[in-house]
Length: 282
Image 1 (cartoon, rainbow, N blue to C red):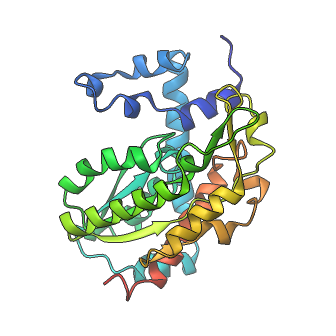
Image 2: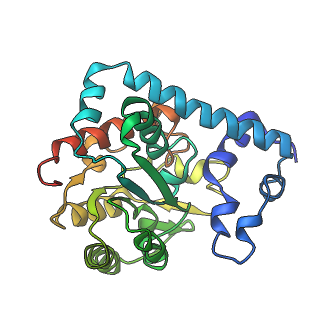
């Protein structure tokens, strides 16, 4: 199939076969050529696009560090030398240009002597129920910080006339509470939660790829999830409130996923909220 430049960008940005099959015995052996084939791309096309996206994240980090206010946020974070941070989530975080990748580049450039690293544990399409299955691997690493950005897919619906979300709101609340309980009981990690942002409801079902999967969302459902996160009692970065309903068009690629500009904005908002909660998170 002949893909357009925009379609190639979306496929590499959103779909990551190596993460989807990572739990299988041979998952780690999935070659770049195999990943490309699963996306319907030639290996050289896939490799070049992925390299472009990673370079874009590095450039975004450099641009943000050119702003003194942003540098101040990085400096104020209560991070110790050698701190291990895990960003736990879904496609918002699995993106090769995600806010977490950008922040990792910023820490390496701004605080190189501290040896601070962000590991991404994120799989596109996952709900908080999937997160309960996967969190054990994260906790076993004994991270110093866990940045939770998960839940938007719980609010996902399927088909033209849906009657329920993928995960009911009460079950989502129980899942989030269990993720919090396990992180508290099994590690000494400090926690920061990030609420899912709103979506452009009308754009999602019209997108060439999301339409194929029958994906839909209602911001009413995402808003309820955001409220649950705010009420958990942990420090929270409330993207749902900050970015608006829906976020500005230039921040979204398909009504759901962030553009690079959107990921840069998320990185700044996470930094701002994280540094603002510095005392509570010590």
